[in-house]
Image 1 (cartoon, rainbow, N blue to C red):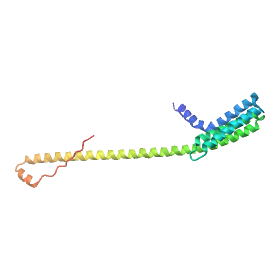
Image 2 (tube, helix red, strand yellow; image 1 turned 180 degrees about the vertical axis):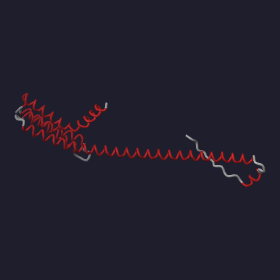
Image 3 (cartoon, rainbow, N blue to C red; image 1 turned 30 degrees about the horizontal axis):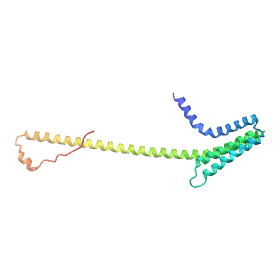
Image 4 (cartoon, one colour; image 1 turned 135 degrees about the vertical axis):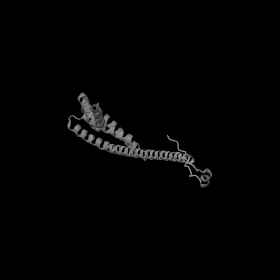
Length: 201
């Protein structure tokens, strides 16, 4: 039972790390398939990819401009622009050297951008785990203190009850002895009995 769960967990951790390479490799493969199906040295196809890549880059620049720029949208637009450029070169070029060079460059850039996101995500995860641990320890400490306090109150109540019972038994036994004077004992004063209002839970 444990081995399949461990394998799925390892796969879930490894898949995001391989995503940039898979994305750029997929673009390269489809670009070469496009090349084999007639796009090699096609000026029209190359011009289309240039327009699309330039438009995506411009959209990314607009999204990143200003104080309220959307970083996610800008990153997506720039990634699309790079993918379109890579696909265009892979489809237009007659050799494999230039497409492979651009694939390596695009993969390196993709991993560089992804590494920043992974570091940020890791810092947030660690901070959340620390906060959760601190809160859990605080709650556990409060529970321990309340448990000790409750036990102490119960013990005090039991001791008070035992003291009252012992005093009542002593008075009863003293009254049975010859020469017992209740009036003298009343004038001398009885010890004050403890009063408790604790209810055992």
